[in-house]
Image (spheres, rainbow, N blue to C red):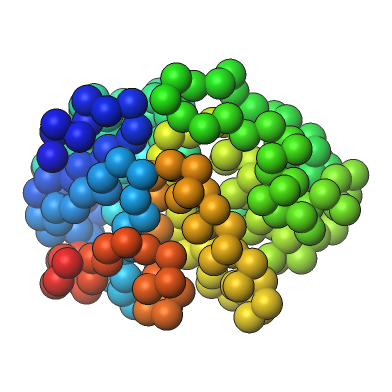
Length: 224
């Protein structure tokens, strides 16, 4: 596992991770890995602990035990902005775009310098990945549909040139046509050698885009 972490491509490893909120424990000694350049899905129903897993990896929830290693670097104890600077991107379930900024402005505020060993995502490449956004370049985020906002949130994260991304429920609440567009985009991101960990409820969607799947139920990995 850690041998992969020496690669210029991202490797994420979670070992015996437990976490929760105040006195409510949500995750119980879960272990998973995303090898360089692959897409891994966390599959499970609402309340299974999928979002908490991603938040714990990203430093938004403090683990009570366990280890998180990204490209050979321990993440526990780091602030979310420090983790982002290491090249780990995060697309939250509630999107959190800047509603008063345009599509182009949302992308620009997230831009980081090219990162060694990672794909570089300029505006032209992002609009090729999400053609619908090109026509909406000057539209404010608050005037976009849910599917358009989801595309923008992913594009904004990629503008930071991450070597790995965490996607929380990328297909949830989207129309079937948009779900199809989202699947194609995720496969294209994977072809760009960006490591992906996505939380999903849809077995069909996860099966289409992921190389491997972990089934999470009540905070425990049931199968992999």
